[in-house]
Amino acid sequence: MYKEYHRAPELSSEEHRTAEAIEARLTELGVEHFRSGGTGVVGLLTNGEGPVVGFRADTDGLPIEEATGLDYASTATGTLPDGKEAPAMHGCGHDTHITAALAAAAYLTANREKWHGTVVFLFQPGEETAWGAKAMVDDGLWDRAPRPEVVLAQHVMPVEAGKFWLRAGNMASLADSWRITVRGRQAHGSQPEKSLDPIVAAASMVLRLQTIVSRELAPITPAVVTVGTFHAGLKENIIPETAEFSVNVRTPDEDVRAHVLGSIRRIVAAEAAASGIGEPAIVEINRFPRLFNDAEHTARAAAALTAGFGPDAVVESPLGMGSEDAGWLGDAIGVPVVFWAFGAFPAAAFADGQAPAGNHSPQFAPNAELAVVNGTGAALAVLLEYLGN
Image 1 (cartoon, rainbow, N blue to C red):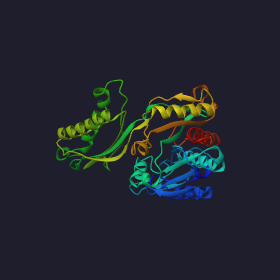
Image 2: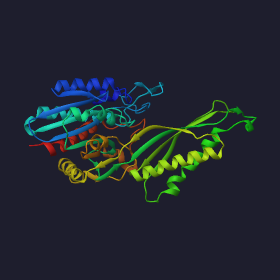
Image 3: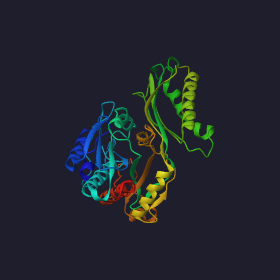
Image 4: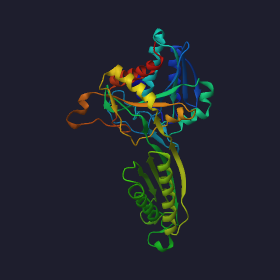
């Protein structure tokens, strides 16, 4: 099942075949289900009275051309929001998450004597673009599904199999992505005096933005400002009318987020004014919420993983600058969330200071068996902590 999902990834908001395959498997298992947020699927597995627990598995792939060389590597393509075709790959391991959730559902349906209560399986689309969790909530998810006492989620990482990263408090960073368009005046390269050069203005903005973290925040404050794209012009001897760049921001909390985003607006406007051009247009691409692990429930999850995988299985996770929208599923209704990372690579992959390719790499290739066994085992360990007899 894992290899089939890996072969056929779909990009964010395009997870139609993936959703249909999940629905087909849930139907085989006799699990009630419904759609939410377009391509999201919610499975309701009930076994008598008892606790209600949510379990999230994200389903979308990435616009990456796979270079793993696996015999089940993806050759699929998808369509980007701008209409362009792009290669598609499960370069972040969401195929693992789908498989582990479905395998856990299969185990629970086959072993009803071992547990009681309800699992709300949340097969969530669009994690990579931060719209999926909110789309499901906005589509009335929690009006149709029972309110859980906790929402659980997990993520495969380039970590040794049998190891789990977990921490109470902030588990990931807030994230914001903006597209900034600088509009000047076009002119021939030999007549710069007739232009208002958007490239020079935008380049000044890009450089100045790097001073926000280095000069406006305390050195102990974790934050990142990245300019990931810059596009302008078509020919070297024409000063173009516009320049466009995108910026990605990672911050630890709402106060730092507000400061950094405010500084970006200030710098962009000031550099535009210094260049004699109008204020640039800023469009939000995406916005990731906080991912906050409740302390009490994190301790329960850690105890369950330790019991299932051994005394050295759980590792205190550092605060990562990655982002996740799973937190929205719980925060939207005031329910605690627990999110952990699990490993799916053999110990040999880390020998002599080596490390496997990480998430979002075209070489990201978890070991198939270790991914399924550890992902399913972790899901069951924590679910049965709440639901087990």
